[in-house]
Image (tube, rainbow, N blue to C red; front, top):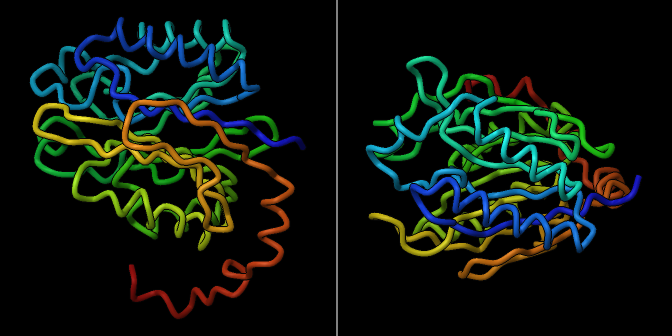
Length: 265
């Protein structure tokens, strides 16, 4: 299988302005497609903005809502899959979600953030209860989680045991926690033998200061692509042949002794 060229859109767009954010996404998709990318990943809550406060209920929409329809059109027009973050409404309940739409405009998977960070998220969102959500794309098994979720090692290990090859993590990583992007994410990729696409917001937004530093981390623990602190599009390859070789040479999953870990749960 050829590598899956993966584009990371590090941008906060324009908080509260869905139309403007769709325009940013459309322009980024064109640039990503020009590099040969088959997948474009955005940040947490990209569709609406993160620090939107009282606008969360107003801007939240169903998984098959108008935002999903607009992004499906972008995916088809540029011939690549798109993973985007958004506030999802399901009846009276609102989730912090991420959805994957393929290059044919089909909705492949929808994930609801399971670990809510801080007072803002806990006020406006309900935590999801499905730990592992996956989809197949270009011969790779993709997994999904959001921001704070990746900081729990049990979460990422669950994906490793379920066979995730490339873990997609839209995030809203803020100061002073940049060490997560710099150190934790590459270590998670190494200890679980997978690729991780960690895609952040950037700059000031409400009470938050997002740190950028998006990366595509490889199973060797290195950043195959790394953004700086400003808005930008970076591209890297998730190579299944390299992944297979790395898994063969790194025995973490084979050498586990689950019987010793029962006290953890």
